[in-house]
Image (cartoon, rainbow, N blue to C red; front, top):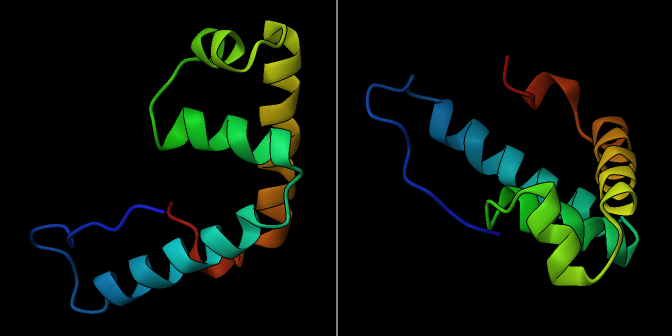
Length: 86
């Protein structure tokens, strides 16, 4: 997972909360099936479009979209709602 500097002008506890959220997301990603985890990582960490992901993993576009949708639903269920950004 990628680390990052705290936002300029962020609230004093914000960097701690961001670090906790990053850690929680990393742990949640470990619970996803490999194909879903890979699709999410390519989309969010590498910035690829769904079409680019489909080409990279040699899967139909609809399959990639389904994998990402299912992964996002599982991540929402696994993550602590109090840490999610508005």
